[in-house]
Every structure is written in C-alpha cells, then in structure tokens.
Image 1 (cartoon, rainbow, N blue to C red):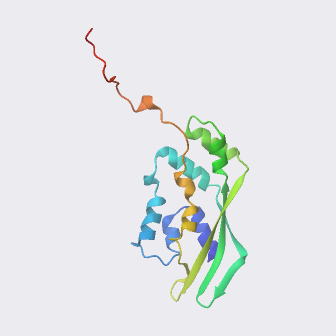
Image 2 (cartoon, helix red, strand yellow; image 1 turned 90 degrees about the vertical axis):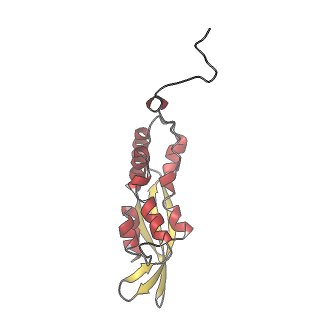
Image 3 (cartoon, rainbow, N blue to C red; image 1 turned 120 degrees about the vertical axis):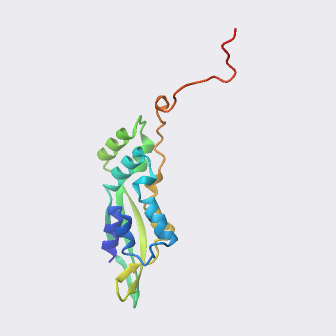
Length: 169
C-alpha cells in the first residue's frame, strides 16, 4: 500500500492519489489536492517547470519505518527529485526553457519524506489517512516555487502614457 501510494504521488494524478486515501471526494483535503494538481491552476511556464521536476520524482518506502498495529499502520515514503532549488537559485535564466534544460542536466537530488498513516478499510484495504498533513503538502512545494523570471513586458504592454507628460509646448 505504501509503495502504491508513493507511485500515485509521482504520477501527479489527483484521482490516483485520492483513490488510495480515506478522503471523501468533496472533503477540503481532496479539493486542495485536486486544485493543486490541476494544470489549469498554473501558467504555461509554471506547468513546464512542474512537469520537468515531477518527471524526475521517484518514490521509495523506507522498509525500516513500517509499523503495523491492528487496523493502523505507518510508513515513511521518500520522494526523491531533482534539486530544483539549487538549479533555480544558482542560475540566471531568461526563460523557463533555460531552467527546464538546466534541470535535465542536474545530477543533484533532494529527498522529501512523508510519514503516511494508514487505516484498514474492510472494503478498500489500507488507505492513507493523513493527506491533510503539512508533511504531505511539502512534497509539492516545487509547484509554486519562484522561478525568478521577469515576464517579457513588451508582450503585455500595448501602449504607454507617461504620467504628467503633455504634448503641449
């Protein structure tokens, strides 16, 4: 169950993730996950960055952390991904494509550990019960990371008018 949940996380598919939890479809946590993992929530540049990072994600279960007690269990799920912070913070990029290229060249990784708590359900088996935990949200911090790229203002400004300027001489 822990590896399946880790794999669902790396798929970045809200439905896959939620299907392995005990969250109701309309719970606050479920709605947050659905919104956060929707490409519609981000700009094209953000989506390029998110996809580049998420493509590097690998989930492993720390077998030594697994604990089972009747109908409850827990396990540390380690998500390994490219060290996007070092790439973005150490570079001077003009556009997201340059960042995506640098991510592809980066060999450094970072780990985020989430201790998944499971409850056994007679119908559905082991389900994760703590996706509303801050540790779970920390896996996805890269999704709103500041890329430090200024927009090309020439594409969004269609005229200028200097305050205080006049054409009268």
